[in-house]
Structures are given as structure tokens and as C-alpha cells.
Length: 213
Image (cartoon, rainbow, N blue to C red; front, top):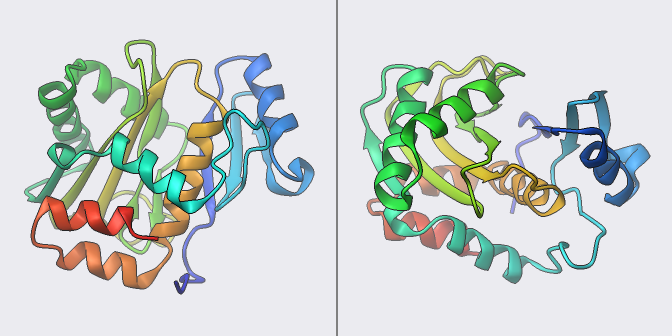
């Protein structure tokens, strides 16, 4: 799988307190090399960073793909949605997860919007992974939206976004979900994966692309 060297190889995640901050620093492989501590509430994680704690670590690609399938059922996938702005996108994600997962659409919107204030979750090459934590989220849940027309997202490369994978996790989530974000970014860094997602005709095809090793 070829990775585009222009792809932004960083993921930012917000931590809620000092204990989570220290947990992340201490439990990633080579933390001094892999983690860039921007502030007590903001950590930068390079693509494909691994989490060391055995009970959380994703031991292989098969386990990761199984987790993605659980996080992203086909009902959480929408294709060629007419979206006019980043705000409208977050509203659409909120409405989708409210309908399919019973989450409050307002809570989803606020969670994604507040995280976005820390910096754009646009990774470049037309991809974004908006994400966040919320007390109402009991287990990780995702949504995938392919926009009919690209949406401005303040990505590092300045390109608008068409492929959006949103991830909501529990408020106390730490390593496992950070690794999911990192691996998702790694998957999106493949030009062939991005092209396949852009040409997929059904949610089932999208699900198969994410499930493929």
C-alpha cells in the first residue's frame, strides 16, 4: 500500500486531565520519538504509532479491521451528501449518529466543533478525521461521509475535503482510540484507498475497503 508523502502524518488528540496526559506519554512505543507534547491538553501522534499497554494494544491488522467494522456499521456510511460547510458537515454527522446510535445530535456537533477549535482535523489530500470525546458516548462510534462537493476544511495542504471519517469516543478513552486514529490516518495516506473510497457505489463497498488489509 503506497503512502502519499504529502499526507499530513500527524494526529492531534485532546486529553482531559494530567493522568491521561501521563498515561499517553508512558504507554506509547518510543514516546520521546513518537509523541510531540504541544501542551498539557494537546498531544501530537504520528501515523501508525502503537500503544504498549497489552490490554489495549491492537496486535495485528485483523483485530484493527474488526474494530473498525464495529465502530463503522454500514448504516453509519453516507455517500455523495450535499454539504456546504464544515459546520453543516458536523450537523450532518450529528443527525446521522442520533438516528443510528441514539446519541444527541447536538452533543455530537458540539464535541466535534470544540475539538476543531484546537486545530483542523483535515489531514490533506481531501481527507478529514474529525474526532472528540463526550460523556454521553459509552463506546467508540464512527461515521463516514463522502461529500458530493469538496468542503473547505483548513487542511494543511489547503485542499478541500471530500472523505470524512468522524470518531466519537468515551470521555475517559485513551490509548486504543488514539491508535485507531493513527491507523485510520495511515490507511487514508494510501492513494489507492482514497481513490477506491471516491469511486465506491454503495456503503457496503466502503465498509469492505476499510475492512481490507
